[in-house]
Amino acid sequence: MHTFSYVKAKSVKEAGDLLAQHVDAKLLSGGMTLIPTMKARLAQSSHVIDIAGLSELAGIEVKDGKLSIGAATKHVDVSRSAVVKKAIPALAYLAGLIGDPQVRNRGTIGGSLANNDPAADYPSAALALNATIVTNKREIEADDYFQGLFQTALDAGEMIVKVVFPVPAKAAYEKFPHPASGYAMAGAFVAQNGKDVRVAITGAGPGVFRWKEAEAALGKKLAAASVEGLNVDASNMNEDMHGTKEYRANLAKVMTKRAVAKLGGK
Ligand SMILES: Cc1cc2nc3c(=O)[nH]c(=O)nc-3n(C[C@H](O)[C@H](O)[C@H](O)COP(=O)(O)OP(=O)(O)OC[C@H]3O[C@@H](n4cnc5c(N)ncnc54)[C@H](O)[C@@H]3O)c2cc1C
Image (tube, rainbow, N blue to C red; front, side, top):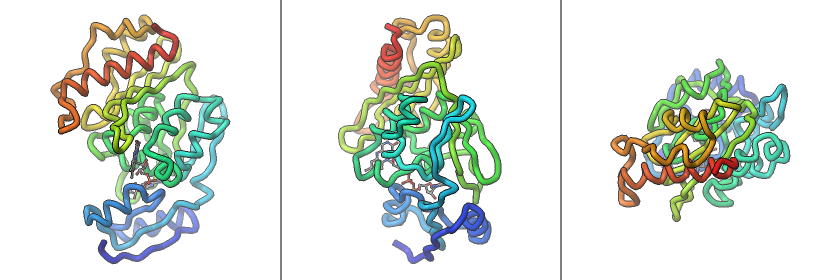
């Protein structure tokens, strides 16, 4: 690991000022990704700004039909929150599937969304639920936020403060986890509000994406059979020693069907 200065920020403003002063500064939230990548010298920074304990980044609440979760909220707290379980049970379920107990006790929703790993779970929920990513500078709609492999709409020096999820009529998440890491080989988050159905796929491709053909079919009839004749385009999927493009495309479809079945649509 290269040497760096560690600063424990006392406020979102102080963290933002430090980011503005030091162009290669990095925020430290749960550290589940940042620390290993710095140790492996895949990331380097002159300043590490610890935002983990900031009260401005904490809190889970429902107001005006929207569930708001502070960026520094740990996966374990989302998974166990009575508020989340009541408003969007699928989100609590998703958080409980992330990694292992150690990862869930350190990793945060803000860190996960900022990192935008192509196999992470939260991006699928944010995209399917049409969430708003609230930063220290602006509000970004999920459709504009995710921009491919580890890419987001966040500008340099921009910090996620909270994530706001409109509470859907129904939602479900299903993932096929990689047996070693728990990351999604493919995961499907399906959210429904009347005829409006959104399907977001993670793990299978180079970044989270909406499967719009499935959304159209499920909008007409919310049933697993509605996607039977459809196929995710395999040419855009990931391929590695764990699975071919075709395997991942098929897994995405199977996870979508399972999520829809969970919503009561056989
Ligand atoms: C063994 C292992 C298994 C895992 N399995 C899964 C899994 O199954 N599913 C899954 O979804 N994830 C998984 N993860 C990832 C984990 O869940 C963390 O969410 C993820 O590492 C990032 O969150 P963090 O809080 O640790 O962020 P950090 O590591 O602290 O930061 C990650 C990046 O985001 C930036 N950042 C952090 N907070 C903010 C913010 N508020 N605003 C802007 N930028 C910010 C940092 O500067 C850094 O660049 C796994 C990780 C490990 C180590």
